[in-house]
Length: 271
Image: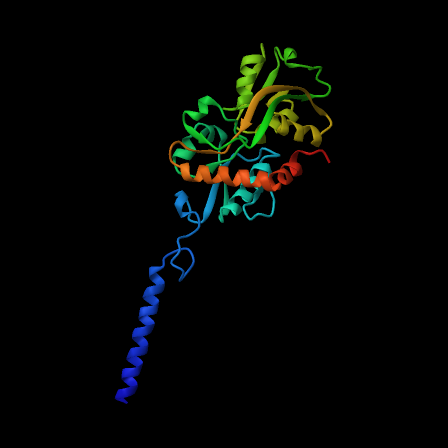
């Protein structure tokens, strides 16, 4: 009886020791003692790349897909591939573009990276760090086919829809003489306003207007504008250098492997 109690006590002590050892390993892989993936990037959520984006803005971001975030599009699919390169999961949050491009959302620590077809500009660089460019873009003018508008020179006295805080708005301000610019928070409001006849034209990124042209033959792009724009992923100023460098490296790996081109062709190659 006494011997059995001693044996039981030894077994109990061994169990407690193992349990404590397991607790000491913390997050990541239980029992491995290794840190969780991405710990070196100071992520909002350990093991997860949290992305902020203004949705919808097809073909760059819109609802749908099967990656588990509830969203898809060129930006989202590209970052999903980048996250996999870095052994991270992907999470996407829908936020307003103006606060995102100004750096406010990123500085608040809401997300690790902003991805919303955001043009790299000197003004934005004052408040945001950018990745290497991942997409080259044009601006464009979308109108009804029966509007009689053939160029930006025909916009005097017309209501022209623009997205607030964008380079499209800046281009319209400088070049659409005599036009009444109507600001909207996103393409999710711009396009319905156009269809309802509240505005006569939309001046914004060419790929987005192209989606509307494809969706409804009553609308057409009448002009495209070479503005030398490149999109970049955005980061809180001076706070995410390690993550930015890792994403730049993963982006280059995807270009080298051909995976970037595969994703690009899914959204921008004529079918």
